[in-house]
Length: 488
Image 1 (cartoon, helix red, strand yellow):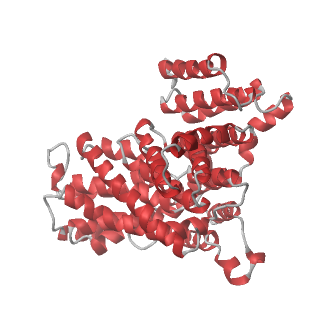
Image 2 (cartoon, rainbow, N blue to C red):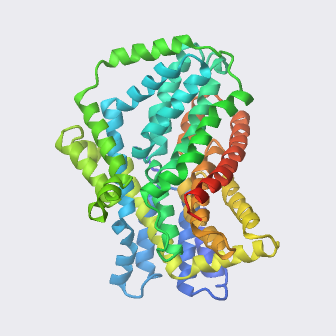
Image 3 (tube, one colour):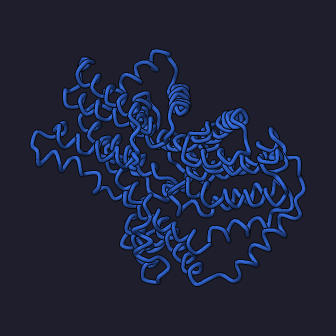
């Protein structure tokens, strides 16, 4: 018996949409035929991703094939295949792929669990303290876990469930509201915030860096350190607010949890002293942060600057040489290789849509419609970001959403007079924070929602509340912070 991962109806719908744009919809004035045909392939690809017609990597292979065969980017067959494969030469894609492999060491060595239980042993006396312990654990491992799903769903969520179970809180017994309901919501709503705080905290962030650089002619090239510093204050404020806001709306029945610290301490005792692998992981973790933050260059001059992706390769090399990760571990990290493939396809298509002028045309349409409202750039940006953010109700993938909308909305904001770096940082933050909205918004959400602690109604209400809180903090606190930093 054979099985297939192809979903026929979503696949046919994606093909139909692409064919309609290619053959039926007239090419608008100011748009080349090749640009319009590439848009047809691009929209079909995004629709297929949203409808989960096939695994995203398989869809990416089809997209690369179609770009190469149709010659929409180049009349020469050899030029077309070079264009179709050009995404694989993008260093930011390899940064994320290699960082995902490095993060495998957190799970393999048990360091991720140790970090989680350690913070619970410190702050776990009250339920809200456990919430903050989960939040701090997420924050600590975020810079080296580009899969927000692996971080929130694979590392933090099992810890959260074991703590809830230790207090007799489970969906099966109808006791979710004891403590599990609260912790599950905190577990989830920290995840979009930590994703917004580092380029390496979720896979699509490097795509945003590239789209901003392309739109500004490389005048703005956001480094790892610039992003981290910009997101530091608004991110910490949002993290500080999440356990409090969730507590105010859905207070747990159990508010004092002295046993949680004992439970975490017993788990740490079971783990024993830090293993060789864990110590190497800590050392590599520290090295990555120091080099990604650009400290050697800042202290000793530009001769000591190191490329961000080269640093990731250095980290992986250390783990391989020390035996913490084996080559089999690298080969088995399917999510990393999957990410490199689909990311390369989407980056390639987005790049050529920009080169062929389609993004500029669409941004002009968005800009014109907002401009007719007659507001200044500040109010216009609020409208622009709100539309971009809440459009995520219609997406089950942040990557698909960012690929489809970011470049055009960023270009429209620039045309409306918004400061380039301010606008870029605001939209970059929104691109992760929009994960808060639904139970299908990103890979982490179905894992935590699927554990059954939170009803859909409560999930959506909390998501909307947190969207207002996070957007306000990122826009106001972030905006003032970026002003102090001289970013606009």
